[in-house]
Amino acid sequence: MKAAIYPGSFDPVTFGHLDIIKRSAKIFDELTVSVLDNKAKTPLFSVEERVKILEEVTKELPNVKVESFSGLLIDYAKEKGIRVSVRGLRAVTDFEYELQIAQTNRQLSGGDLDTVFLTTSLEYAYLSSSSVKEIASFHGDISQCVPEFVARLIYEKYGFEEV
Ligand code: PNS
Picture 1 (cartoon, rainbow, N blue to C red):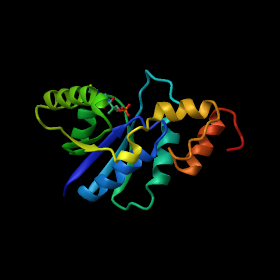
Picture 2 (picture 1 turned 90 degrees about the vertical axis):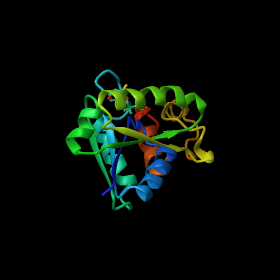
Picture 3 (picture 1 turned 30 degrees about the vertical axis):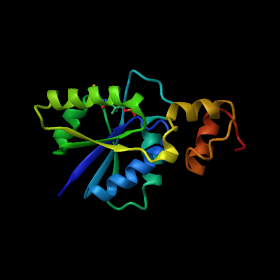
Picture 4 (picture 1 turned 135 degrees about the vertical axis):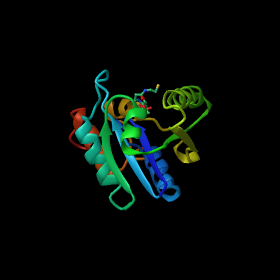
């Protein structure tokens, strides 16, 4: 069975992430979307909230499950017996950062964890969780960036009751 992990912050999940999830779920038999519990960052959504949101947006995908992890990705992957990490690449600006993480993980894991990159669909190439948060914080329109119920939750975090 081919299994993969799709790790990330997902704060919040965007249509760009969802596109990568759906496409990876067609390539791998089982995909675990894994939310990083990063104590060094102050996220908009707690890890529990992000897991719940991801569970909701992936509920129609039977071979996708959602978990959280802390610490090193290679340790978490080893624990699960998974040897592939999936990451999305939007533009060349992502490449340097992603290449470094992929090579570090491969080196640190002694070759046990490889990274598979999927290029983001063009319509989502401009999307990022940070820009979604910035737009929402000014009550801008994020309907093209995230599912409707996620947009509502984001606006709520910024104190806007009406979408
Ligand atoms: O969505 P993000 O924030 O770009 O995801 C980054 C993530 C979670 C993939 C990366 O930060 C990660 O795997 N962190 C876990 C810690 C780790 O393993 N670091 C070593 C690689 S440099």
